[in-house]
Amino acid sequence: MLDLKCRLKLMIKSRQYIFYLIFALTALIFSYSFKSKSSSNSVDKKYSIVQLKGDFQFFKETLQKNHPRLYEFTSKKELDRTFDSLYANISNEMTGLEFRYLLLPIIAKIHCCHTDLQSSEEINAEFPAIAKLPPFKLYYKDNRAFIRYNFSSNNSLTLGSEVISLNDIPITTITNNYLQRVSLEGIHKTAVYYKLNFYGATLYSGMPNYFKNETYKIELLNSDKTKKVIKVDAISFKDYWAHMADKKNDKHEFKKLDENTALLKYPSFNYPNDSLRDNFIPNIFKTLKTQKTKNLIIDLRGNSGGPGENSAEFIKYLMKKEFIYYSTGNGYEEYKKLIPLPKDTFNGKIYCLIDGGCFSSTGHFLSLIKYYNLGILIGDECSSTFSCNSNGTPFILPNTKLVLFCPQGIYETAVKGFERAKGIPPDYEVETPLSDLIAGNDTVLKYTLKLINDKK
Image (cartoon, rainbow, N blue to C red; front, side):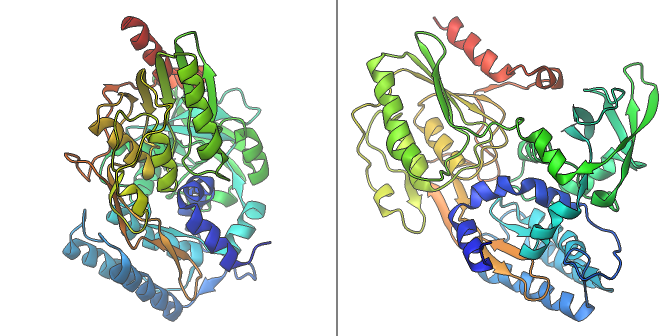
């Protein structure tokens, strides 16, 4: 097992990937707010008022000293008022998870996807063995929730059914509690609901004893507006992930759809090695040029970003002339100068599929697509834009060992005319109905293919 120092180095190197990799775990932790019995394990360990107040001051001062845009979206007066209010609520012992739950509204008010507060290494190690998870996955929309997947043997839990409450807690309460604690980039709803509907997310804050529930009492709304209540047994952390393993789409893939059109799925700019950047991408564009492909669909949905050089080395194959990638940022000096184009640039039509999962350097990538009018964006507004804060540097709270990720710099692409509070908007907004999700129909891709055919 890697020691903490090694783990933190890995976190710094691939911050965006880890953000999604551990999202399921951190989403579970949002919901932990019960009073636990005295125990030797890290999950149930209580911390004194003195210890918690010490960690609170460390948390507050670290943000104030290091964050480059702490008051960009929430005024200093309002944020200070929130700090004071939460500090006043430290009136009794808490577990590390309870304390984290208390602090998360501060993270949410900063509106920075690179600012986060995660549980300790010890809790992360113990949690999978302790947690019991729901045998279903919810789909959230406009403060409502529906059954997306059913992992139980109870066929009454029909896919698409609307959920009114879980264990007598209204869905609106569960959703609102989560929304008050989620880390976002800027201010818009697309990213919020993407996070709620992300494949790894289960349930959220507002449900006492969440991961210790043995059963779930689910109140459903039938199509005829009548209500029914069913009960299902919780499943293990391992079993939940076994069911979810084939639901995610995290592989880079390239294929020709027909003689004139190719599809490139690009779910991340963070790679386990440099082969994707140095071999996969050049070979693809060489093939596109050799085969004289007219249309290229780049599927960036769910792409949470990665190192800037990976984004820059990709987009140069789409550019029409030399360009500057970064205008601001620590390092990357070669990308603040004119970047020469490779010989196999693509000269056909470009279509980018986007959604609320496009974070960080994916926002940088799309800002250049939009600024230079390189292609058509289709889907939902992405969650980042031309500018974001740097990857969060990990700071460990001294007592609870919670890990605060706090940016210390700013990165911006060399473009103009974009707003920081908003993501990059699509040229064609296409919403995927829940019925299509359940049926496995890719609404956005089908729309794109129709758009291509109509332009012939």
